[in-house]
Length: 283
Image (cartoon, rainbow, N blue to C red; front, side):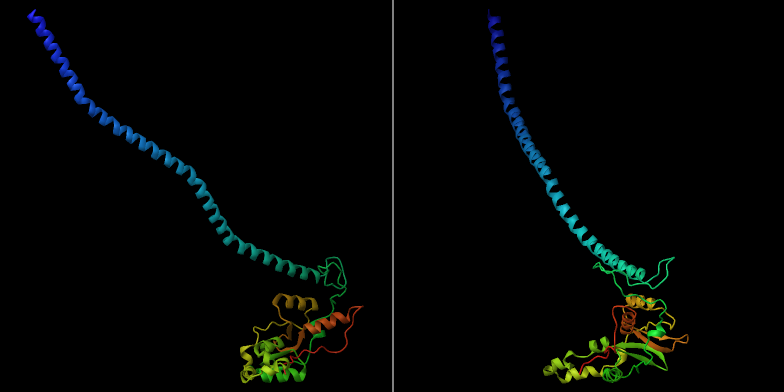
């Protein structure tokens, strides 16, 4: 009997110790678990936020990158396309002009100026037998490069010439046109602006010809066909070409007015009488 009570007492004490140990360990487990749960909750929230940000980020980045790419392409390609377009237009114009002034293989006759863009055919033809020596001005006005614009202007008005050759002993060093004269002098030298005329305007007449003359001088030979002269004028932009011999001495001058007169006089419907005024009229 005493033994049974002792065993029950020991058993009760063991159970009490077990419960006490369980109660002692329970807070640690709970404390340990709770931070993990909290940490897990924060990590999940963070992951969701990052996922959302990643989902939205490609769209924004794609839009920005597309805009930058479009701007870059516009800056880099537009000038090239413009230059290519302009180059194509110029090349096409030169090619059309050149083709219009040549005689097709197997055909004979006078090459014509072609058909304008307006649609009506041009009736003016370029005589194939006419050369530079046939249309050139034999009287050429000369001046020294150290002479002034005023001196050149006086000579050009006296001989009613739109060009003056700069050089010595028949060898051209440069050429001055009436456009060069009007561009170098003040506009207030013209009668229409006389009331604004001042001393500084007169000073422009003392500019030396060597400062405004065009060079190098492009020339043609006396035997050059009229079509070749027109082609050179269109290609190089000049309106007057000196005619030189084999030694480089000037024999005459062909201007656009000489060409116009020749073309008009060879047309059946149009004719020209008299001489076109060519000298610049500033005063």
